[in-house]
Length: 555
Image (cartoon, rainbow, N blue to C red; front, side, top):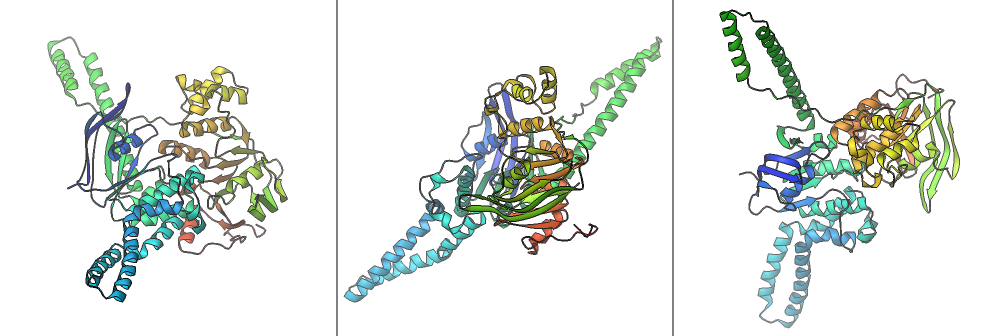
């Protein structure tokens, strides 16, 4: 019997239908990814499964006795206690058993001194509780808490911090840690990778691969889906299709299906055109009329062929001013601190024309700070940053702080450029802002819409050294693919911060710069090679640059 069964689920908001007759089954121990464009209904579907939203029609059945855990997307509310209290809550039953064992030990000691008749009863109770405590892993409870907290990026000192002082990302990670410790039979995760750095992502992948229970995860992280899932549910146009295998297997199957549909449509169109031509050109004699009527009947009886759905995609582009000098950027003994925290210490680096640098490292390591220093938005405390001859930098900020939240979308473009209204609307159309969408306030846009607007504004500038800070945040899979294609063909120098490993592979990065602890390590090679070396435990030493084959000696 399936652990989860959805039958003909439909859901709409006003006149807009989001889900139309969606059905699926999830078996015990199965790990499935739920994918689809932004706005396709993924979060709505997960909320229906979690019992937080009612479907308009259809049924959602979870087998009896199933414990469900749900991590929603976005900022989550947490209690006012410490991180430790949050992580101990799923283990409260075990901790209560531990307290009762400690109380029994005191009672047994007192009864032994008094030599009364209740000692045997206490010993029996003590034996039963210690056996249960051991069977349920009580002796490893503290180690489990520490391991999960550390795996998701928390330091031991964070366990005593109050949750109401955590950032939104930290709160999400705290709730995820509590869910993993709870060990539900069905784990529902909506974009769990949004606030995880590379190390935490890799830890979570290993943890979920060994997870013996059922998992349904919404994610745009294709590398994560490849490593964790064995089934993909693809949601589009209100309909859902199921594919066995991970994301790469789904993608190969989907492309085959689409190619087959396009081929069938072309063949059908050729056949229909030929028959219609013969009907029009039929002669006036009775025999020709009979043949024409026969052809008309055949056309009427033909089964319709489903046309491949045209996905809405935007067309990003980046202005290019021409080649710069050979040496693009020099960082010489740069130090940058905020208060008592030093992000960069005596940091030195050289970037050359045509380099495509992937900038990675833990959250808070200074990746965004380094891009701001290069872009001239901040100044180093010590040291020097020099741009080479004819270098012109264009910069995409992670938080889209260059956007004015009070501007309308159209106003944001016209205010930043010399475009007239018609030109601005045509430009915004390439980024899927059409009709009344151009009059939305920036502050009312979704995360994906803000990312597209920031890219639309960036495209109106031009340069030859492109700095991008987490450009993939909030973009759905079709948008990610378009952005990858645009960056892969960008002819200038590229420095990009991203946790999306699939993205870093596809943009043809040829150097990887890893920040951490104020130092850096440089790997000369593509990101896939860096990842393999990292997984083998042979990470480059901080400050050491590996010599790439074929590079000039002075590099």
